[in-house]
Length: 397
Image (cartoon, rainbow, N blue to C red):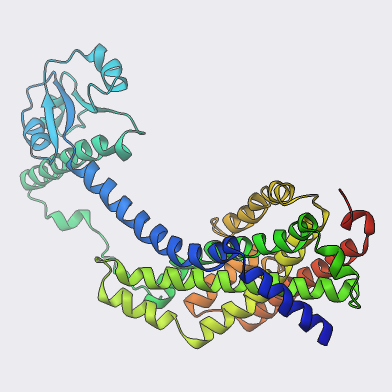
């Protein structure tokens, strides 16, 4: 055990001297994650504001005697009505962005309305354009028109408008603000957490495997009294530690960034502070340890196999996809924590993190998830040691 500790100290010192490792372990998570969170929110606000303020040119084609629809459409914010557009040119104008939409009232529209029938209206728009803002603005004008017509018809029939509302529904949401917010951000945090554990462990793993091959220092270590198992474990502990630190720093970066966003209500900020409690922190750390060990063992095995630092980087690149897919699956509709999903690596991390943040985690699922991750970590350690003991792998040039 003392030899493993000595190797751990030696490798940790070497890793901390490497600027790239420090960048990926500390600097990038603590700077990039707040920028990602704040930047994405600000960009979304800017895009929404931009789309709301843009003046949309909408063709108005009325073959009936109705005039109210034109007035209601012009009352909509950000609408410029274009008249005199031929009906057979609508498609080409919208596709070329000369128009953003068109409202067509056919002949006999007003006659049908006056005889208590349904008037036919066509809305032309492009669904990919500005999140269908043109459709929403035309629809809003028509909804107002519909409400006015219904009110007039009920008045003529001397019928109370309440007759159209046979039931009164009151929504009673039993979920607390903590549960709602926890479920909402619970899918995002494990994605960032796992990715930064992987990135934080990747460069130390490359340096302690392929990097030592290039420097010629691996042979010196192999000639020491330490066994290959002890050398592997010492390196594994260092790589796992850097992954854990990177993950913790990334979560710290996310948490701190939420307090630099101006428009977050005080109630949400208080709920966030309530989420960050000793149970949540300790639970996340417990989950991080086997994840970091599994990633470390996997990355070290690849690093031992690679001939050079560059080859190790190219071999580890595709692993990002392997990690991202299960995390995205955990965000899918209908994905809930149960005895089956608790045993699925990485999917269980995403689902369990949501439960932890919502404060609704069940102990049995936590234990099953932890068992699954520890099992994967144990397999990873065994494979890493097995791989390191093969001389044709270590001395592959």
